[in-house]
Length: 135
Image (cartoon, rainbow, N blue to C red; front, top):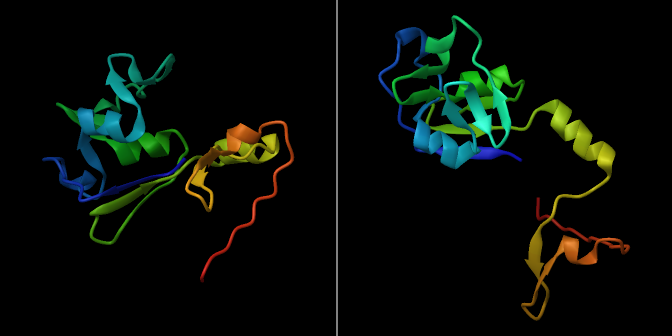
């Protein structure tokens, strides 16, 4: 999974963190699925605690430093030069686990008649995927 955020707005943050991605907690949850709670950042039953003494680096009022949180989880976060477009990538460990499983992520596409088909519709069967790109 990768997340691309555009037209981000920066909160009033310390100058030493001006190049970080600060979003309000509602936008963070909508974009990433992670929620800031007293016990840390949570997604379902999984919570990642904020390191003691570093709370100000991760959150300020209702603002969350997504780039610092993403780095804390060993996931890549990259910004455009202007800082208005951000890419939040999946960590190497997660990508490696996916590759080792030999299971392709599910997707749904139309056939030539417009009927929608999902990869999971063919689970347990051999499937040939032919792809093409113009570049």
